[in-house]
Image (tube, rainbow, N blue to C red; front, top):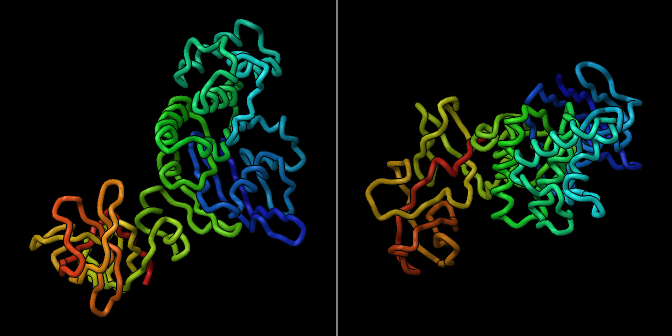
Length: 346
């Protein structure tokens, strides 16, 4: 039970929205399409669903080409950003809708509704109007409705993006649990790194209509395929380095890198928390340090952001805890945090 996309291209007039995309989602797998707004990820999902015309290429399920198969015949479940619930129906009426359309009898519908509401944490909500629910509760109902007919593939288009951060983080964890417990094969569209890495066992990073990398979440985070992927994943600065025996040495210090990085020239992608201030002889996973002068301090939610001038490097963003924040003009030592450093080809 595998979704396979080969050479898929979608055009809007002269605009190539999706360009020759290849990807696959195995039975029970969850693939996240991750990328910035306008990169083509939602268009790709809609083409898989049958909602967008395909200019070239194929969408196949278990090797069978779905060209010409209408949306309602593909047996795919859909969850959109706004849920698209029926406001005049109760929670149970929404969840049971697909089962009613399939001709399931009342007892089967009631049992399946109760099972799914328990699974999504809404047991006892059957008679509630969906207009009386919070945004997070409505998305849980939308998920239960999509799962009710046991779709062979679940398509989720930015399902949590309309929610606030705290609720989104919690629902992402809950959604990952539901997908695992039901063994659902899913394709998820999101622009949120945390959401993609929480939900998916494979992440496909998109840019300008193309897939630039498909890998497990940890490898995408630690070993981005190119500079464009690295910058989208928060690497605001790249520095040259040389790897030897599992360590990368650069002008900003020496840092441990993943064991599969071969010796030789690389580039280090530095995220916001990659450079840290230390007054100790050692710290942050490195024993060769840089130093510089503090130019500016900005207090943020859980740390202080510093702008530091480093000889032969220029201005560098660094972070430090609230305790013992250095003064402007003070010289500090800098170390690299391996958890915030990505490694790219040289």
